[in-house]
Amino acid sequence: MNDTKSGIKIDRVTSWADSTVDYILRDKNAFSNLVRVTSHDYHTYTHSVNASVLGLLFGKYLGFSQDSLRSLGTGLLLHDFGKVEVPLDILNKSSKLTTEERKIVAKHPEAGIALLEKEDNIIKESLVVVAQHHENFDGTGYPHGIGGNEIQLFGRVSRIIDTYDAITTKRAYKEVLKPFSALLEMREAMINCFDMELFKEFICFDLLPKN
Ligand SMILES: [Fe+2]
Image (tube, helix red, strand yellow):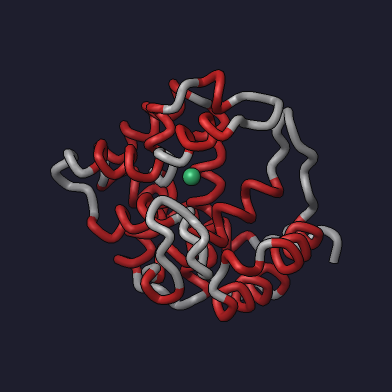
């Protein structure tokens, strides 16, 4: 129970690898955008890859079609792309951000949309992830403070995936939580952020991986 990811199955990894290879081969522009994130901030890159892996597995668990998985996986790889416009001293700051700095960070979803909309072959559904991954189910998120089903399915899924990876990944300024503790923390302290039905599915997915 303390490490719910330890029993991850080889077939889940294989399915992710299939989707990822397919994505890289088909969508060179999106991948070069990811490389641009890498050169700006390595943590954002690793977080983006982790989120995409987890999102693809969760999307598969939810029964998403191949096209939907491709859109979701691409969106999660690029969800923080707008952080290329956030100064590194803010992104990597080890102490609490000031109000002004938080405002700068909070611009990254819209900055990402503005940059990615210029791409010819970006998938529209992938942009939903970029735009809505910080919107909370109760309307307290950003950039627009929309709530409930105003947030599209990919936005509600990515809010869960993004949060889970963020709190289970070690950073210089915070302790990492193990998977089970992370789920508890999400339920106890952040449940307002999530679509409850999807969050229940995420807990089942996390504890009882399907093929
Ligand atoms: Fe973000």
